[in-house]
Image (tube, rainbow over all chains, first blue to last red; front, side, top):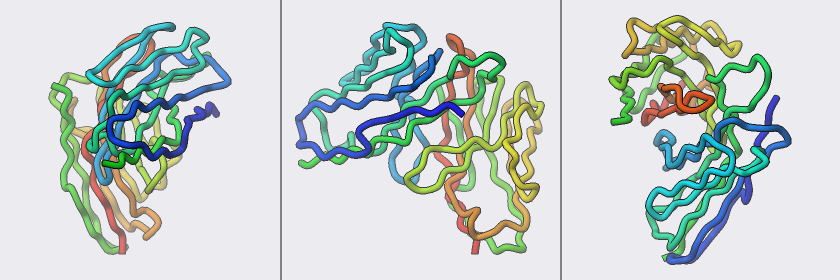
Length: 115
Length: 114
């Protein structure tokens, strides 16, 4: 099946620093979604990307749909303690006959912010 | 509004119990999902309902039984579960955007099977 390689697996940063994480795939994706999950809670959609090259911001968050359609990155600027959590990338691979219901997830990036 | 609600928040059950998880959305989304998530792992798809009909069953054991009474509600009936079924159970709903379904998750039900 399709796999997304998400990196880094974890990161420790100082409050105020910028953060960057990315997802790559060996095959083309039609959609990229970025979620944040707090412990014991459901994933919250941060940014959705639908077109190659698309760059979208949501407050301090910026994400881009790679031109090759095989990658996406998420940047967080000026991190704050509440940014702590696990960030998942997810997407819909472009496979003939594949249902649009099935999301492929990355393994997550665990972010820790040191005050 | 992109809210999906789930009840209960926490559930403890024995292996002989029967319980149900409930999910509700009022966004007019056409598809609803059940996922299972283990600690430090991404969500794993269990079932998909599209227009109130079961569309996808990811080879889930029959001790998990989904039900979609109407377009806003989704239930997951649990019976004779095993301790390894303990996990966070997530409901999601989706709408078509772009080339795929953009999914919105509920807060989850933390299930512990004793």
